[in-house]
Structure formats: C-alpha cells, structure tokens
Image (cartoon, rainbow, N blue to C red):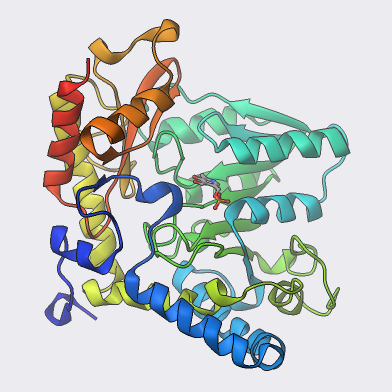
Length: 393
Ligand SMILES: Cc1ncc(COP(=O)(O)O)c(C=O)c1O
C-alpha cells in the first residue's frame, strides 16, 4: 500500500483509533505500546471463539494457526521462518537465549551501559549460576555518531569475550546502535551477538536481518501495537537446534518451531493477532511511510525541544542515531542533583499538573526525558510538553 491508498491520517485525528484519554498528551508509546480499539475488539472476538471449544481453538487448530502468524511476523521483522518463535516479551527471549547459549565459567559477556536494566539483571543471574563475567561498556554522552559506538565495543573485547548483548534501540537514551557494523566486527573476533531489538519492530525495516546475528528479539506489543504479551525470538540457522524456548513443553528436540509454538497452556490471543496488528498500520499508507514519518517527527522534535530547553542534544541532530524516539536532557535549571526530587516525582508532576505522560530518568548523572513519536502524535503534543517544562520550577 502507498500514500495514495491511505485510509487513516497521521496526527491528532488518528487518536480516535485508540482508547487514549482525550485530554492526555501521550508521549510514552515506547514503554508498553497502546492497542488500537479495533484490535481490542478482535481480541474479544478471538477469546469468545476460543471459549466455544477451547480444545479445538487452543490445541487442534490453534498451534497450526500460530505457526502461520509466526511466519508472517518473521517476514515483517526479517527473521528466518524456521528460526522464528513467539515469546511473551523481549525479556523472556533474552533469558531463553542466554540459558541455551554455550557459556562457561570465566567467559565474558559485554553489554553497553545504555542497556535495559532487566537484561543486565539477567546477565547477573547467569553470572551467579554459571560463573560468566558480565561487563558494562561505557559510551559517554553526547555520542558523536555510530562510529563511536563501534569503537567503544570493539576496544572493550578481550580474548575471553564470547558474546555481546547489544541494544538496537537503547531504552534510556533512545539511540539507534549500528548493529550490522558491530556484528561484522564481532564476527572477525569470533564473538557472537544477541541483539536486543525490543523497540525495533515497527521502527526499523526488517531489523532482525541487520548483520545476521546469532540471536535477535523484538517486541510486537510496542511499536506494531499488538496485544501485550507478544514478542519474537529469531535465531541464525546454526542456532536453530541449540536455542530453546523459555518453557519446554511436549516437543523437546522435535524442531525450533514445534518447541516454540507450544509452551504449555496459556491465552494464545496476542500471538494469533500479531499479523492483524501489523496489517492495521498498513491503513496509514504502509509501514514504510509510518516509519519514515515517525522518524522525521522524532528528528524534528529532538531539535525543537533541545532549542526550547537550551541544551545540547545527546546525539547528532540529523536523526542518524534515532528511530522514532528521542531522549533530551532537562534544562539546566531543572537539573537538581542528588538533593532534588527523584525522576518519578517529576514524571508524576508532569502528569498531574499538565496531563503529559512522558518518561523521566537519570542517566550519566543528568536528568532526561524521552519522547515517543507514533502515528497519533503531532507537533502540538511536543509544544505542550515544552510549555509544561517551562512551567515547572
Ligand atoms: C531495550 C529494551 N530491552 C528489553 C525491554 C523489555 O521489554 P519487555 O518488558 O517487553 O520484556 C525493553 C522494554 O522497554 C527495552 O526497552
């Protein structure tokens, strides 16, 4: 589909397709997504259909249907169909991959300090259980460009490094990391890469194919707006037999697909509807248009907000390190240091006094906020955020 066949318009008019409170300035799609009304109704229908004959819908036809959707999602994210399986979220995928990946006591696993805390905690657990050494690699801010990311991780590799757990889009800083370059550099050092692409589906084109890493995971319940509990793990062909799902049920060693498609009894609705979620966004003129529009909005709003706050951007203003989010330092006058209110208090104040939902976090000793840009956002939302920040004091 192209813009000539666009059914839905971008911006505030698109809000009618979501349940979001009409008076809420919602700038945090990135945390938990937001499910369009139409998809919520479809979920109700699917759940009612399941209740008409749970045995038929969950077992006989359900597992078969899930494979078809997994293949559609594999095509969307750029994974191999036979090496793509559903999990409930990206954290589950990281846990499953690390559980199955061959690591021995003393092996190093590298992760950037911009990584997601739950992933770091998982690495700490693997360290406790198997004696690996997780190491955080620092990437100072502002980041001048992708080359600095490659240099930082490559120079941190040692003879003991076995694996890099690499963000594709970082959570606190919303930076797009050069996955293809890092996977290539790691390969030349005999190091494998697990890509945490939690935010990548719907932000980047075929993100699982970037660099062909050993493993990649992405959430469908963030940017593609799927029902929550919907993510995939994709693995390279040489890992298909080795990587197991988070839960082993009846089909051990039958095939990657058989193992992932049946992980015990649960509500399969989010997985069954993943393809419909992806196709919903086609009605905005297709995913390419959606991605480009949201990326352009994030790039413009990073510059606008840095100007309004009087701060330097943490990454180049040309958008080369952004997806559809941007992280902006708080103005100096609101950088309160350790004695000031915690970030959660400022986030709550923005919501309570100004009806702006935006994540606030401390990173590298400074307070920041992170904006999300999806189809239902427009410039007016970020102007309201800037006005609210002006009013804080
Ligand atoms: C980079 C990154 N990794 C992993 C996750 C975890 O996602 P989930 O809570 O769906 O497992 C997130 C969530 O925001 C994230 O931003």
